Length: 76
Image (cartoon, rainbow, N blue to C red):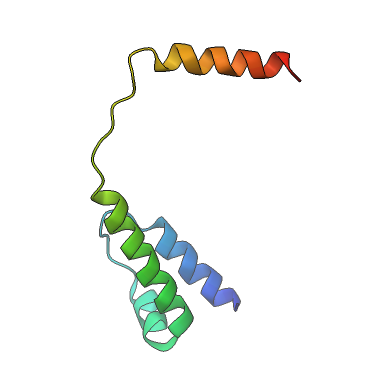
C-alpha cells in the first residue's frame, strides 16, 4: 500500500458522522479502487452500527465488572 493510501485511509477512519472528505481524498478515491472499497466498507459498517438499538447495562454492572477484574488479578 502506498504512503498516500495510508494517509487517505487515516482520513476515512477519522471522518465522523457524515463529515465531508477533503477534495484530495475524493480525487484519490476516484482513482484508487482499493481505497474506494475501504471507504465503502467503512461507510457500510457505520450505517450498520448506527442502526443498532441502544442497550442499557444492568444496574450492578460496574460492581460485577470490578469484582471480575479483582478476581482476575488474584489468579495471576
